[in-house]
Length: 228
Image 1 (cartoon, one colour):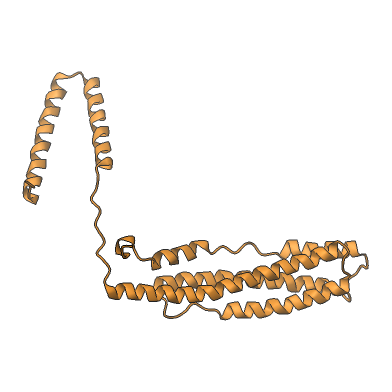
Image 2 (cartoon, helix red, strand yellow; image 1 turned 180 degrees about the horizontal axis):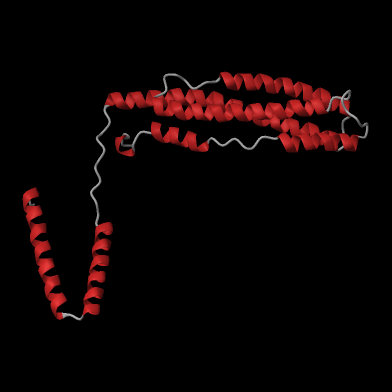
């Protein structure tokens, strides 16, 4: 038999009064130190019971068919955008590997400064095209507000990284221009290009937190997933 709300309140009230009377009796008959220790142990025990007592979790209401359809639609919108975004990330990675390979080849004496400058000029052009494409790859408008804001932050970080990468390549290309170099020593020229790379290279691109939040937001709760 379950108690009503008023009955439960009355029971707690009576229990509190009884506990208070017991404390008065103990205070009267027990030594002060023992009484203080007893009160401390009682307080600690009450705190442990309070924090360890199992709490009933409110069950989330089941999603309606319309809500599931809308969520699946949002998932498809994000997935299509993210597939293209991943291609841009792969292109950034390829450009960066090309950049390091060009400098390494020149450092090892496998190419001259004229060839290195030509390869950097080609890479600079490809990097500019990629930067323009990434800048234009804005979040899809139909995406819901929270996910749209997170994706906007992803785009902002990616554009900043792509711009820094392009700037590094462009500055290295300018430094490798044979007409601008003040030395004909390949070792000195290589050290100059390496110094530009070290000074201008961008920090890593970190968007995992935003992408994870978007996926969590767009995931269908397990309680609402169809049984296998």
